Image (cartoon, helix red, strand yellow):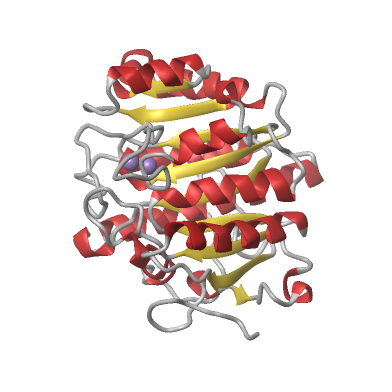
Length: 338
Ligand code: MN
Ligand code: MN
């Protein structure tokens, strides 16, 4: 079988990084990170369109698609200092959620077992269920992967529209299966009017830790994230980072299926994911719910693209510092001595 490429539109890779073929293990044998498109929106409860997220996040940047991006903040090149490949999309038919999730889980397990970190471009949030399941299996870390989940919504819902497979339920499925411990499941950015009290009770019974926006604003984002980082790693070997783009205020991320006013700024999200990728042993990442049909001027697609770059740059700086015995100083001026 040849490389599948993009499910929609031309066969391009994320900002021009090298391609690989999931059927040919040698093509990604030296990978640190393998980017995977998950063009699925069959799990949306309201507005669909996230199936076009991978395509939009791969292509949105105006700079040359040369597989190279120097981070001014971190003084590393996340696409070059790490060995990053793009395997294209997993075949996901939005009319068959179970089959699509099976296809994705197999791919994620394979990438993780090879020693690489999967970075998934969604798709709606349903895909986090197969993503984390595949990582926990492939890395042999069942029940020992901490999850940090950015979202306006808890995604811990019970049966909806007759199914448990949808973008409102992946976190419940992951805790129910034992892939992730409920008390190592951390959520950041919840707000609004969902979920109802009975689901909050279920979350509390699992030992989940959810930071609602009011707490974040009252205590300060930094203090909450310090606490989240410490908790996520207790008795866990690595961290899975799941970013639902609707954690950001719809004013800065309008292109998404279920917007909720009052979220983080894009600046806060970028700084936080960068910091997490720098400080934590990351074993898998997804950026989900970018829905281009509802976007304006590519604002949301570009934010998703930058979340990916900040994660990769943070991981690159983490390995550079481990190698060179250096430490990143965020207060250092960009121009030495000026
Ligand atoms: Mn979500
Ligand atoms: Mn959401």
